[in-house]
Image (cartoon, rainbow, N blue to C red; front, side, top):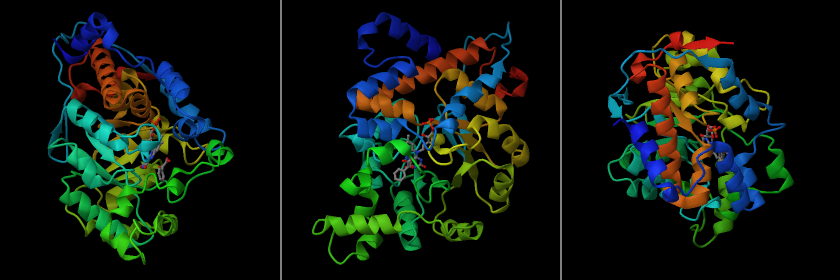
Length: 383
Ligand SMILES: Cc1cc2nc3c(=O)[nH]c(=O)nc-3n(C[C@H](O)[C@H](O)[C@H](O)COP(=O)(O)O)c2cc1C
Ligand SMILES: O=C(O)C(=O)c1ccccc1
């Protein structure tokens, strides 16, 4: 029995073991009930009037699947290959910072769930727990590291080297957040978790960061938080700076936050290994193009030179199918797993992933396809 049918069966038979809602809308509503307003809105809300956040979902409706029949889809294989490594599914857990605001175990619980489900976890620079502690929960399971490139480039270099030493398989450099956007809810709530020392674990354990302090973070946490606030983002970066990071590591480097086809071309020209089409879940430039809308032109511009991943708005199996048919190699999910984490820790993240992967597997089969490599735009109609 293929993955999706198996999960479906189990869910029908062991209904009582379903500890989180199956539908995304219910999942979000339950997380809202459970969490305090400040952390809930930190996760759920976006920039400005949240036009882009809404478009990220609405825009998927403009792409319709035109299923094929009589294709013998009884057995399927969802695996993909990226940078010479095989992955079981075309899905990764997006880098999400400060996970301790929704669950005390934060990234550690997410890391265990990712490892158990064989889905790579992209650990954020803004994690509450350090990248070494996160790796310590994952055995040999696949993991990538997301870099927020510090104003102090020696800190950025140090983090990349630590990630390589801790067994991370790729470096994702996020470009769209050299500073936090205008997020109305967080401003109304006067909420910035970092000021409460959450989400800075990678800095507090970084030798270069600590060398810039007069006293250790244990002795003077406030001074460490102030230094973090000064060095976190780096709006001075240009394409020329990429050489510096490339020289620090032999791992593949992906750029996250690409929306313009010309930036996608520049990424290829500057020798990066992959890009992630993303508007940060609508949390940065409100009014920015929906990620799924940006994808086709970027796929056409890159012409297969490097793999393209995407995120922002992936909620169900059909969203994954559409992104892959347009030309993405894999997708990242963000908020859905944060709600699973909020509601039920590690088990909650596992169930979110299980449900999403089962939904994707069934949608693939019912569309007449058996593998990710069989997907292309012939399966879609743009309306
Ligand atoms: C609470 C929260 C924190 C995030 N933190 C980071 C981060 O530290 N680094 C990063 O590259 N992206 C971060 N993101 C963006 C995600 O990686 C991803 O782009 C986005 O969540 C995808 O959209 P979705 O939530 O609609 O799936 C964060 C998103 C959320 C919701
Ligand atoms: O909240 C975010 O979207 C985000 O990317 C972030 C930025 C800095 C620290 C933690 C998370």
